[in-house]
Image (cartoon, one colour):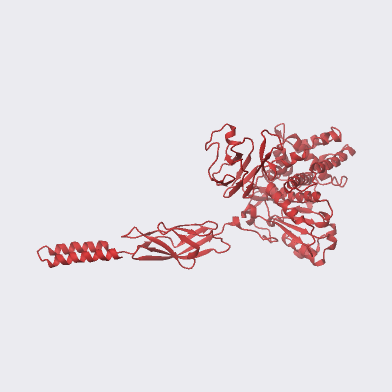
Length: 623
């Protein structure tokens, strides 16, 4: 301000001197001085920034404020007003940022005043910053009825109605498995709340989770439940899981607690509101030995996994429900062919998955006494005895259950034995048993209504390189069950370590944002000495999702790197962008690395140790 006043004063003096000096040229000198005065006259800045900004929650960058000034390029920016303390602005560049990432659910609009000064004059403009909701960080409250009625299909074809549900936008880690406890007093036996949470978490981060889950857990003996507690249990279950039914009628028609046992799943009618689990203390941890109860809980979660996955079209992210199903439940219940999958696959598959997931979890939690091999042998013994006692018995007899009551529990034991036989034929079948068959069901059903159960089988499994017809598999399994002694056939079952370290790649996300890697001597001999272990699984495969950042914590002495080539530089590659992947990779320290996954991240990556060969595993990227 002072410099401009002095300059103006000096110009004025010059002008007066010229006028007072007389002479014929005075008028010309005065005009030149006035021109100079006009050039240096100060003009206020003009703000050109928008009056409204839109910022996604969890992001700090707002934008860049802009202004012009006819006689100055030395502008200074500042903020004032109601919410100015929540933001910062670079006084020279105008870059605006939030001091802490905004949360839409806490505050969705900010009002500030943008100020610009050239040192003498200033301008101000009120601006509003609107926060947009990112559904990825939303949560879903337990016992929430998301859809009290069947929502409208987003699209359809001649066979299927296709649906998108609001909870699909919830981040994988926030998609809930709600443990709803019912207990008049805190009678649940320690440490069972820890075990229950643990086996559900381990299942989720191994198999993935495609629907929200509400578990209804009676943490006292069924015979001891009060009328009030029983009413609350039944009302909650009927309200959430049977939302399409009349709640009062559902509660009135509920089975007596004494007749109930552990259960789980997700049917087409309840799909909009997610899956369910029912657990009862006296029929599990209050009665059965610890490890058997863990297997049963893993079995029930597997039912939600297999039945939720069968509805999902992975390519579109939509859930498919056959048009023929609603209103025809009784027809399907009395049918002689499966509605969606043979019962020996549904129950045998849940036993197969439950035993193996249980084995992995107890190993990670250091729980003693779990004998996965003994569980497998017990199932095989029962299946073998069924076939030995009936020369005409076939696996097909368990399509609809327990062979019309002639072989109680046969769908569990014979189904388990059949799937173990499949795994023995080809190690790749483990992935197909745990994931691919269920993931292929909806696509197969859409192509040939009523035959998804058998077509998905032949589309998933192979025999001698060709599609494996399920009728051929019936004969192969039947013949195998009668091909040798019980001891000889039982000797083909997998070992404990083969079960624990069996690897799979789900079609959906299965990895938390923080991954801990340890290094230890190999358990499964595939060369080398030490291996990376994640969740006690040797060289576990991971499924990551675009748009998220993952933190990997690796052991000292075994630096973690990524590559588009299996085992990276140890596979003969050179240290380049081809063999070592560095986009979005930040080395926080020698034992911590972050990977930001974007839409341009390769579909397949590999994590490995840059010092020692053969330690790492595979990463699958999904959008």
